[in-house]
Length: 466
Image (cartoon, rainbow, N blue to C red):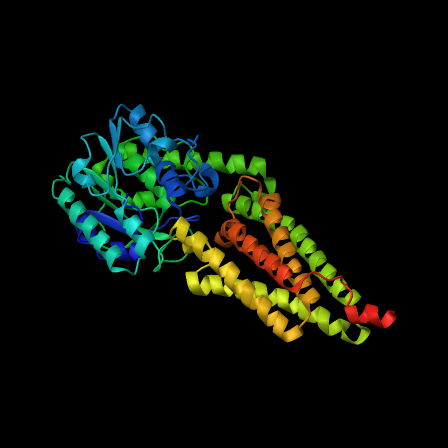
């Protein structure tokens, strides 16, 4: 499992050509979020990210979903893993006979101890992607290194007796980062080669949820108990496997098992939501519709913020200027939001987690963006209107709208992200908002200190009344 190896980079590798000679390789959609720990869970269980419980990289909790590693241990096989991280062991405690955490410069393929089932997890491609981006020379060199080391390992393999599966968790953006659904990020290469695999020189397609069931099928293990079944990709199994390599009764039993899984899932989904007709896709859509209904409250709250902004502008302006001042304020907030989004996408490539190459870099960039753009926007506002109270009122409207958006996120989706996982943009928003809006607030405080606070009504109005 080569961390961070995208589909396009994988196609350049000589090791891929060697695996294709002894099996087949398929472009594989990893789903969203295209983040490491959630995809490790999916690779291991056959269960999509929405339902494993692994929502991000910082949660060290073990999963309740059954893994193919645990099934192998239960069948009496030895299971060895080598990685730079402890995450696989954290996700599935007790699933590995041995688990070695190795430094970056080690050849992981040469260091993996003997076992019936070996998990080899080099991380240096991912680290090059984060630090330099997928378009960099350093990323290409890391891909060349894994190609060289993997090819050396494959030359020791007896493909008539051994099985090799190569896959990855995600790719990287050209600037570095992952988490979204962009083509080079959310697609990897999965190759099956060796014992029991049907040879096919064409590049096919696969879902990442099918990797664990394919390993179970080829090793003669039961399917993972919680794997995705229904609206699934499991029919790809019968194209991956060479029927001549297995007794006909085994092949038919596995086909029947897949159908039992599908029927059981259909019955469960129909019981939970009769209108779904037993379809996982319909079940997902019904819950997404629930999110959209909850978002209507958010829209109403935002509308109240902007109505309040318009009302306060109209209260403090002279009769002839009230309309133009109120519309200017509303336009200022709208343009501020649009330009903020455009700057994030233009400078970082996306408004999702793929824009986060490194934590420290992301924090620095977002704070700089917030401070710089808010300061420029406040300056333009002042130069156009020369009205300190209107400026403070419009900055306050931006902050109040941000507070509504931030509060709506846990209120609509749950304090701990539940089911289903939201879109990449919505998933990303709290990371961005936690830095952007404090920066806006900081600029607003400085502006207030510089221009001074004034009552809502114009001074000229009060003077005229005296």
